[in-house]
Image (cartoon, rainbow, N blue to C red; front, top):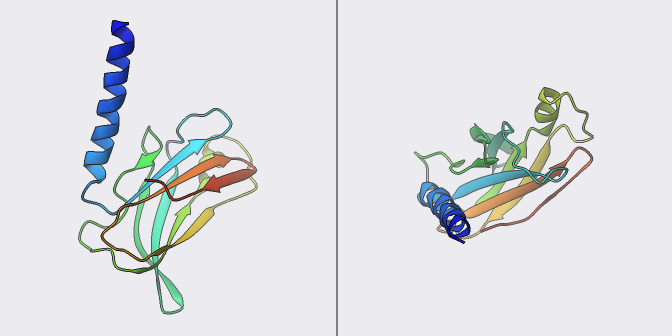
Length: 136
């Protein structure tokens, strides 16, 4: 029972640490491998903003051992309403693992209407499929 309590406490603290890290940043992402249920570490991710008829690069990052990037939005900018695109470089990820994939990248375009909110974009990934949603 003590082990269970300690495990639950550790998981709670881990979640709080992730939330605290992202508290000041409006955008985070998370990649999970649907084949084995584990986080996908080492996925390159880019963030772009739709400006006119072009996509303008804002930042990039690599998922950590938990499959997360807690602070993807540039720290020196404020998020404003508009259209943004997160691109998960899944082809590079699978190539490093010596695996094939049907999707060399997964672009997720999303609309920001309230810039004061936090946006979290999880990607559930397998070599031949993916799913995404607005997380919290």
